[in-house]
Image (cartoon, rainbow, N blue to C red):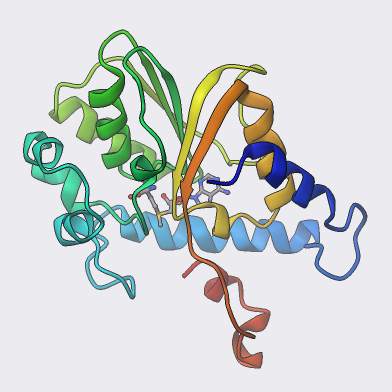
Length: 220
Ligand SMILES: C[S@@+](CC[C@H](N)C(=O)[O-])C[C@H]1O[C@@H](n2cnc3c(N)ncnc32)[C@H](O)[C@@H]1O
């Protein structure tokens, strides 16, 4: 597992001032608009919108705990579109404070709540209003209380320093146009000794020229 400190140090190596690799504020707005548009549609159903399995099949393939999956209302599982399983990376103890960055429709919030128990605290943030609405509906449907979900982007986390034992994230940081700021924010809200457990996708080759400048391609 990579420690938040080392990610923070790597992030510091990136360009501090606009230059090659930096994203202009106009492009940041464009990317966020494209992401909101795409995930407003995904909030209806992720089926057929990704190159990897989503929904129950996706969660099964990623090795989510079967007993927790069985206790989740189908709506949670149907709307799952994570790319990995952040819970593999470390145990979440009862009573922990957990933040899910880019919580989508909330299946990982449900899992986190099961692990922290009623004595813990679970919070979700997401950029897309429709996803936040879906997460709140799903939590209500499952009768899960005590989970706060708010609309905000991951580069401006509205919680005080040293708040969380664990930050989880699943398929979200790759979408951030300001990854340095995102990692700095995660580090800020983690308690000393806290952990970041995230699953994500990385680009291994060069993008075809036709896709390189596309906000829509960024949000795929
Ligand atoms: C691939 S989905 C994953 C959703 C959820 N984690 C899951 O596993 O089902 C990506 C989610 O991240 C949200 N998102 C994308 N960029 C974000 C950002 N910069 N800040 C907060 N949320 C973001 C999207 O709205 C979407 O709900």
